[in-house]
Length: 316
Image 1 (cartoon, rainbow, N blue to C red):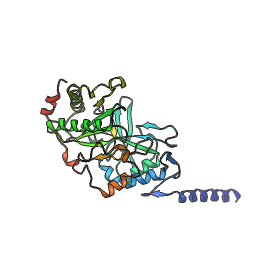
Image 2 (cartoon, one colour):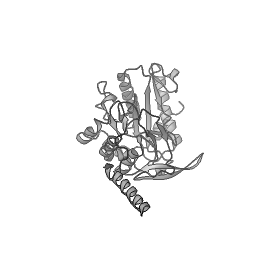
Image 3 (tube, one colour):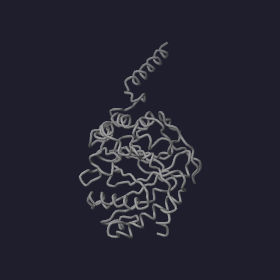
Image 4 (cartoon, rainbow, N blue to C red):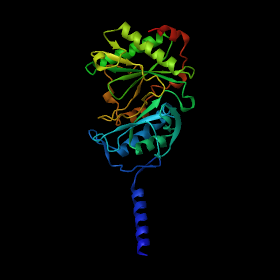
């Protein structure tokens, strides 16, 4: 009887602990009080609440895509790590897609709901990075990303002008583009694509754009990675346009001080006065709730990577 009473008491204690755990869209958040961003006094519960609040706006750029994530189990004051495969973990609302790779057939997480995004937060995920193709069409990219990665010594105004010049070049090829902050020091110029081109074509086009910019403005741009090549320049990183490469998802937090967010902007609001530091876990939910979606036309802007566009940059 004594052992049974102990067992009943233990079960009651477990139930009591679970009942005390706050729930966000039905997902129980353990260690909710843990401080994840010490400089901003942001807790794990606040991270979960953030993803619940921006989830509907974020889902179009996440749903159906293989994801890789940055996990910080003990917050930014402890080691964080990048994880591609879901392995044996059971994350609330999160599914898996099996992908053939050189290491074998591996399970990648897929998030199809706001519950899944909050489940990621429960799993101590801060950053979400997505493939540029869907799980249903892995070999047909539907997103092209030009990552403008500056020398830290450059002023923000130089990066703003670089994004505008990238847009103008794409427009000359009859291509529509969108822009977002990365949550770090750079900007992404993003082109939505119809699912017609191969990875080789997407990468070749992105490389051609990068080389064109480096040749047209050699004092401002480089298409070659490495700090020694980026001094006082902006590296136009085209390497994200390859099978298995990822880019940070719009509205994802970044695992960096300040709890900044990778934030879509309209081209009209991109300016030297609007800096990445403005877009954080504290400000973006209200921006989403109150403001017009700056990428409202993104889905309907999917375009072909045309033969004309490929010819224009071929051979570079």
